[in-house]
Amino acid sequence: MIRIGLTGSIGMGKSTVARMFADHGIPGHDADATVHKLYSGRAAPMIEDAFPGTTRDGKVDRTLLSPNVLGKPEAMKKLEVIVHPLVREEEQAFLEVAKQDRRRAVLLDIPLLFETGGGVRVDVCVVVSAPKDVQRQRVLERPGMSEERFEAICSKQMPDSEKRARAHFVIETGYSLDMTRRSVASVVRAIAGMG
Image (cartoon, rainbow, N blue to C red; front, side):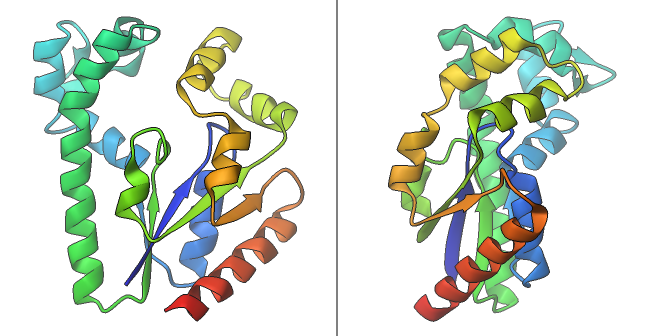
């Protein structure tokens, strides 16, 4: 089973590209969606213990958590120690199911793939990329996003140029959806040839 690592900086179009891979029959595991689920479930009490006052109704409230961790490396590390092992457990469970289903390939959508050394967990790295102005526009259109928050998130991420240099494949998302779809199809064909 080929494990495809999908990554790219914030606002580059990972979710859209992941859906396109799914259209080709390649199931995906989304680390961000998993974190979201964990914040509403088993991670919530652990995060409340570490950062009192950051949950509401038994769920982590990101607007309360953000000021506690953004721009604070020690606090961020404390949060990651709680969340990352839980995400890895969920990822493992996903891989087990895919193996039982005899999938030829799976997609692991990991936002900080290179930053966290996750490249060793995948066979192929696919980077989703768009021009900086397109990225900025997409991110600033998100609810609750500010220029300051966008810059803080970007400062934590490896520069796009470096991600592109480390990738086996780069999928450009700054143009039409049709062009992106064609890029995904050609990457799927290339990966199928590796199997």
